[in-house]
Structures are given as C-alpha cells and as structure tokens.
Image (tube, rainbow, N blue to C red):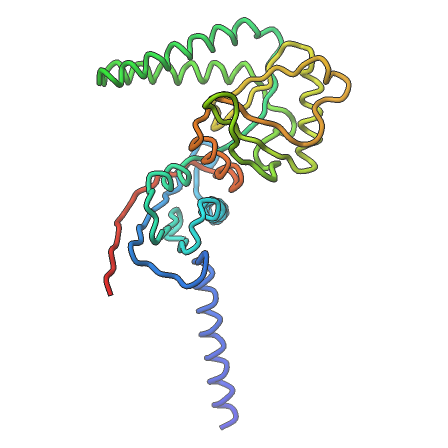
Length: 288
C-alpha cells in the first residue's frame, strides 16, 4: 500500500512538472484576462544569410522583444506564446489600433552609431541629395499611382541606401541599441519630433570615445536604423578633448509625433535578432 501511494505521488509530481514546463511557452501580460474582441497575430521569424536556421535561441529572443514592445504599447492583457520552431502567437484583447501594433512588432529596429570614413564628405553630400530627390519623386509617383515607376524608384532608393551605408564603418565593438537603457519621443523644432536616448555605462563610454574621434573632423556620426541612415550629425570641435559625455543623445530625423513615439517603444523593447513577417489571423467578438 505504501509503495502504491509512493508511485501515485511520483506520477502526480511528474504530471505537475509536465504542466509547469508546458506553461513556460506562454506569457500572460496583466491580470484579469478578458479576451473579448481579441485579435491574433502570427509572427513568423525569417532566415537570413547570417542566421540560415532558426533555433530556439532566436525564437526565445524574439519572444522577449515582443513582450517588451507589447508592454511599451500599454497592452496589459496580451497572451504571447511560441508556436512550432519559428512562430510567435500574440493575442491582443481590446486593441483598436492593430496597424500600430503590427508596425511596432514587425520592425527589427536595429539601431547603430557608425563613424563616417575619411575622404567621403563630398560623396555623402551627393548621395544624400540624390536620396532626397528620389523620396520626393516617390511621393509624386504614389499620387499618380504609377506602379512600374514606383517599383523602379524604390529599387534606386535601395541602391542609394546601400551606397550610403558603405561610407560608414562599424566601431569595435559596434555601438548598437543593446547599450540603451531608455528611449522616448519628444517635441523638437516646429512640428517635428525627435527621439531622446540614454546609454548604459558601457554605451556611454563607447559613445564618448566615438564622438571624441569625430569631433572637429567634419565627418558625420551616422545613426542607422535597420541599416538605413536616419540622421548624420556633425560633432563640433569643442568635444575634441573629452567627447560627448553624460550618456545621452537625441536622434533627429523629421519624425512625426507618432513615429517618434513608436521608435521609442521599439528601441526600449530591444532589436529583433532576425526579420519577421506578421499576419493578422482573426478578430474575435465574444458575446456573453
């Protein structure tokens, strides 16, 4: 009889352990969950040349970033769970702005600060002028709905983006968004907004060194988001001896209020290790 009770206790313990392990794949953000009017998003991780196979490491990393961005959106009753080997399922109860949620969750938001290479000042100016003209042309083509011309113009913009990126080089170690401890949108000049950022201690040291090396040279500090140059400030000669200290900086780029706030949420939540595709599966309306 004692042996039977011990065996039953062992089986019960194993069942509890299996249930506990199974529950680790799902995270409920917030209390008193109410799934009325919930929408479901499927986030599918994409392979890259650098990461040709999605592993549990990438899946867990994406899940953590998604959790951080969901918190930043103020959605306190979301359910986030892994599905298979390369998908994350997100249920968002009561969310009205699904486009914003998809936009914020879908961007990799890989931020990096890069110094401009020597002797490329004229080349950068020419490429930036060309980019401005291409973007202006893109807006005009969209109004005319010329799909063939839009596709060609987008291809030219992509080539321009690649050419600009080659003018800058990564530091060692790269100064990326992983060194941030805070980021938020704030009003700037006129109707424009900017994104204020704060580095952690290690990031502060890297930023100080980078700005000291660029100060007074006339070369730009390239601020890249997902490998696209979004700002390229010049560091003044007054920082040649010390660099910019204090661990804070401002990213300007003619952001709208919504763009600045969204970018702040993405940067606070961290960068996605791989690109993702997002699909809205359904929107449920549950009646009592």
